[in-house]
Image 1 (tube, rainbow, N blue to C red):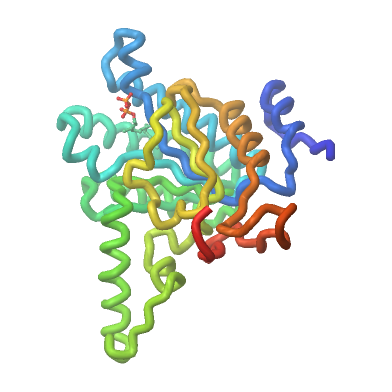
Image 2 (image 1 turned 45 degrees about the vertical axis):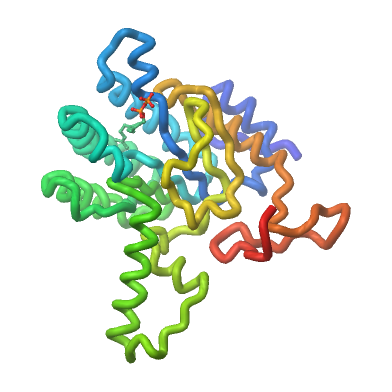
Length: 278
Ligand code: FPP
């Protein structure tokens, strides 16, 4: 089927989009942005120059994703481990960059009808950054388009720990834990991502084949796309190539493919069949 090309795509993006089936776009894409440091090193620049260039990629990718109608995009910006294992000067720079990004990008995000959310142990971020985050979130809260979620001071294992604490807290204030029933939906509802369906597609840049403690629960059935492109070079065309690759996959959710069985259930979001591994 020939897709109508959404407004705003450039010629190369439109060409790749033309190969996609618009009815089967992922509902949620998660991206592990990696390779800023290597990009800078290749150019004999300080690491922070890579992070600065990475912000430009964020801008392009967010615009492209919202233009083609992706409902949710989640970007892994800073992991909890980043705080502990990177020099303070780099962490401080990343914080400044985030503050500047939020201030500068709100008008463009608005123009693209994007909403903004955050996941992670946000209360541990510097107070000034938290204030800017809250300001940007509120500015965009009435939009109705793509939900852009930034993972900041994020760790999937910490998220699961926090979810368990939240389940127990909720039960305690709601009749006591002796009545507590825990199933997969209970846990999903207490994760930071309770506002989102599980990702259909996770993209990692710079060729690394790891999940790096990112959305470990939510990615159970996601398709994984690893590209050698370093994050500062990643553009809308790369995103669209990732989606094209995703559309070639046979998503089985633990079942058999169509030639052997009934079609897989429509389980693109949370609660995707937990029938078994595939
Ligand atoms: C990984 O590259 C990237 C990060 C740790 C930070 C990601 C931050 C940005 C893309 C810019 C800021 C984002 C927002 C939303 C304002 P790396 O430094 O680990 O690269 P390397 O593995 O090549 O050293």
